[in-house]
Image 1: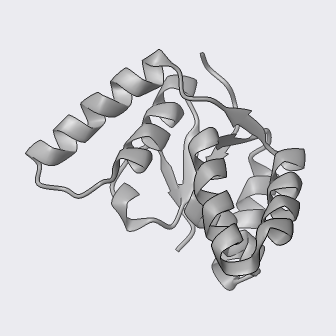
Image 2 (image 1 turned 45 degrees about the horizontal axis):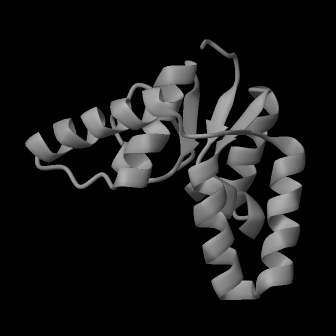
Length: 132
């Protein structure tokens, strides 16, 4: 499925929520690359990080704000299989990209999106826009 737009990963959302310089850069890029998407996996990561640091109410409020601006993309079989293939290739290259990052990269590839991130695990991937 081809979609114009941008897939904002967990790293970028956290910087946006913290209103850092990188977050402001990310927000500018988000505004210039609509529509905006978020992987259900980033929703998961964001919720547990925010709940752990700020409690349930703050976590739910931030997630609600994100979901009002971004369409959630679920993990389906195509993403799961491609993510597994990416993980296999990363291991062969002795790289330490985690499973969630592999699935987010697969989501971007399946949906023809760019991943907005500052996560160094994505460094060198053609599908990324780096906020750092």
